[in-house]
Amino acid sequence: MGRMATDNQRLGGGVRELTTTKERLHRNSKTYDLLRDLVVAGGLITISLIAPLAGSQLARSIVKTYSKDKRSTRSDLIRDLKRLQSRELLDYKELGDGKIKITLTRRGRRLALTYKLDELQLHPQPRWDGKWRLVMFDIPHTRKQARDALRKKLKDLGFYQLQKSVFITPHSCEDEIDFVASVFNVRQCILIFPIGGFEGQEVLKKYFGL
Image (tube, rainbow, N blue to C red; front, side, top):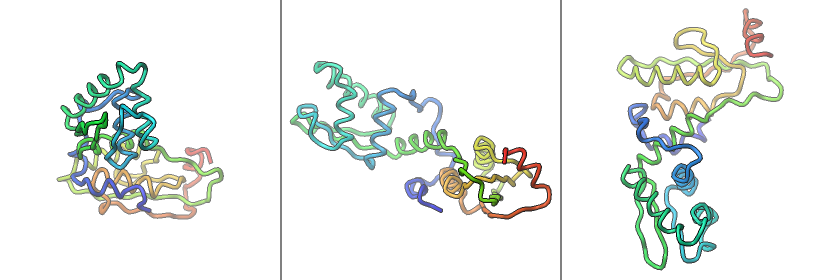
């Protein structure tokens, strides 16, 4: 458990820091792809418009995205960089010789986390291992927004709600729960219990199609 949480734990602040609708980017847009590539690159990348085949594979990919024709490459890229910088999602600096240094901001990384959270899914095992994963949480009322957001996300992931703060699934979910909890900054409030068979499980097996 925990391999998905490293970057998220550094952010802190929980659900209150999640982005507003106004901050979001259209999926499959150039700006969305640019932000995603920056996350993959670790938050820092240098690209060359003069020598587009130089640099990392991600740097070449960014230039290629904007190179429909040579005249539009620089102007379109700078336009989008300015747009993202005005929204405090990244910073960029022209270094000369056609090179541009792009740095992802904390807000930009946070926005990327919300995209990852939106896309998160549980992946059923090819064959059920016979174990249930019981997820329980006790989040104080002062963190009500985080508590409600976590409950909604568990429902979105297909968990079965046994009680208001008790959910169950037959699918492996430790890493996914770790990631969600880290985004909302409530990991210390959540317990995960792998359990075997129990009375009444036939109803749940039917619910999950097992």
